Image (tube, rainbow, N blue to C red; front, side):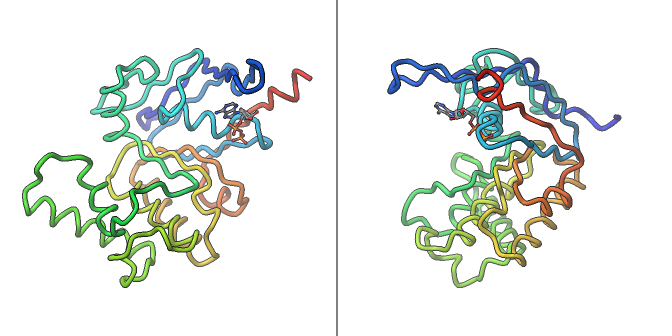
Length: 240
Ligand code: ADP
């Protein structure tokens, strides 16, 4: 394949030690390999508990892998994420990896438009008025595309429905273009029309060259978005 590589996972393993249960060890992932290129969307498949979310969380940096390598495209080069210093890992994540989690986690009382505009600014210190205005415009365009009613833009999303919160979550992740997008059930709480809207948006991102890795329980979403699948083995069952 000639498209540039965006994510390279080698021999990745993750073991949890559950201290509340006398130090029981859970082998969540073992020796996972994955190459993901620009414009591809890989759907992770496997039974519940197989380790799909754990893989996504290792790549985003929420979990530290027990072994193996995770390299991502950052500023035009492939960089190792699993051993990056915390500050470097934060920069890689901020500039090069988007993440749509199942649930929105935001600071209470901040209006929706500000949450999305802040994501577009990505922590820029003292942005000029023009930069800030451009970020607000980008946020408005994204919320418009996702069909979130304009009257909700100035409200904090805490009281929104699950589907509305999920669209704020997607706007927050997509407003800043990044080469890699991680998706954990991005359409789980959406009705049919909004699901279709999100699929169209993600397909457009993929066509622009964004590489995606996701968990999609909805077969229709997988069929329309994924270019291939990666089966994650259920280690717990295999070792019984
Ligand atoms: P999936 O996303 O495929 O349903 P998960 O990645 O959520 O699977 O879980 C894989 C395995 O790792 C499961 O056995 C789960 O109980 C365990 N696991 C996930 N996160 C943790 C954690 N933070 N601490 C302990 N065990 C965990």
